[in-house]
Image 1 (cartoon, rainbow, N blue to C red):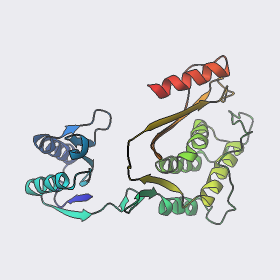
Image 2: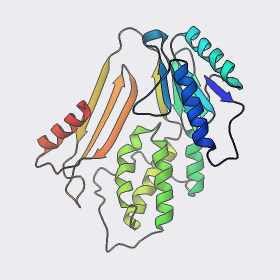
Image 3: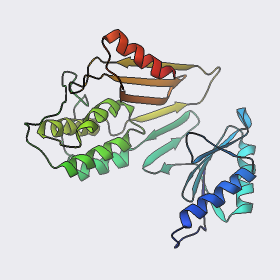
Length: 273
């Protein structure tokens, strides 16, 4: 559910900090604790009676398994602030949310279309892969440079799509390494990602309702010397709760691996942490 605060502090330079301080004090007074890793997330209670709320300026998203606990939270907040209840979450910062009896589906179709239109790729031919498996992007000092500003704009837009499209993580992560001096070779790789986006524009994530015991499963892998410039490998990981993907990551390793076995051990260690 979404709560919209009707009145906030606007017009003053210190308004954002004053508003955050006021809201933080109120939530802690109501028994909420701030998440150590995500400063805009607060939790209260645990297990089935727990309540989680996420803050973005004057919008509050609240979720939990116990409907009475959510109603109590909303009543407490409405007594503290002037706000309105917008009902079930359907759209949030470019992310479309569809809720049903079976579960929740999230995607960024409208945002993806906007990205394709912005870079004149809406009518392009789609491709089945975001990056050619045989390609190895590298620094290209002899290559013809392209508009670095536009290249960075494309990468920034694609990075925001990673919230619902984990299949873009590796390709976008690799392309992100060459924003300093992109060349035609790098631009072609980014254009292929956009072509892949055209064919998967309606894809997203599905979270089914829990049935029975919750099982957490993680997958991890690594290439070997994926970056030919510094000889470092790239690790990938994905974690599921039952059949729902809840966390994923694609990142270059910090040290050079001397074998594929060592690279995969390093990836497994990072995933375990």
